[in-house]
Picture (tube, rainbow, N blue to C red):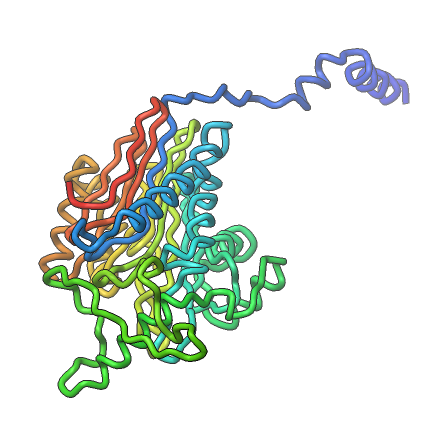
Length: 379
C-alpha cells in the first residue's frame, strides 16, 4: 500500500509540481516559419487555341488582360500572406470560373444538347491527394467541388448527378443551369450545329485550326427594333477561331509544397457525355512535390492519350530532365499525335514553363521577387 501511495504522490508531483513538463507535452514541436516571399510562385492559364493579334480587338485584349491580372492577384495574395499552394490555385480558378470570358463555370460552352457540363480537378503535391468532378450542371464552382471530393470523401472522381448530390450534401453553392448561359457561347453552339448540318461535315467539329480566319458576319433579324439571337461585336469574345478555354493554376508556396487545379466546360457541341483531360488526374492535372505541378489546356483526347501532366513529372523523376525540357518534350508528343494546346507548370525549385503549340494561350505568372507577366500571343 505504501509503495502505491508513494508512486501516486510522485506522479502528482510530476504533473502539478513541474509545469515545464506539462508545457513540453502540449506545446507544438515546430514553429511555422515566416513567409519567404522570394520562394512563392503562381502560374495561371485561361485556355489555348487560335488566338492572334489579327483576330483580337483592343477591347477584347484589354478585357482578358484585366481578368488574368485579377485571377493572378487572387491566388498570389493567398501565397503572400502565408497560405498554401492548394488555397492559391483554388482561389485563382474560382475567379476564372466566375468570369464569362473563360470556358469554365459561368462562361462554359454548350453541349450538342444545349447544356453546360462542367469538369474540374485539383491535386495536392504534398500528399498526392486529388479530387475531381465531371459532367456537373448546377455546381457554381466546380473547382471547389473537386476539392471537396478530395478532402471530404474516399473517392477521387465523381460524375454527373452523383457529383451534384455530393456537392449539395457538402453545402456547396448550387445554381440553376441558366446561371451558366452566355449569349456568345450559345451563338457558338448555333454556328457549330449549322455547320454540322452541311453535307460531308464530320460529326465532331473540334479539329484544330490550321489557319486564322476572320469571324464571319452574323446576320441579325430585327424584332421590335432590337437584334435577336445575335452577338454584338463587343461581346464576340470567343468567336475568333477555335479555342480550348480550359482554365488552370499551379503554385509553389513558402513551405515548398506544390498544387495544381484545372476547370473547364469542355468543347462546344460535345455529346455522348464526353469528358476531356481536365478532370483526369495525370492527364490534364497533376502535382507532386518530388517533381512539379501541371495544368493543361488543349484537345483533351490527345492529352489523355499522352498522359501529359504525369508524363512531365515522370520525365523529371525518372529521367532527371529539367522542367522545361520535360514539358516541351511532352507537348511535342501531343503534336505528333495530331493534337494541339498547351500547359503551365512549376517545379519544387520555383522554375516555371508555359509551352504550347497553338497560335496563342492566355497565361500569366508572378514570382516572389515581384516578376510578373501577362501573355496572350506567341512571343
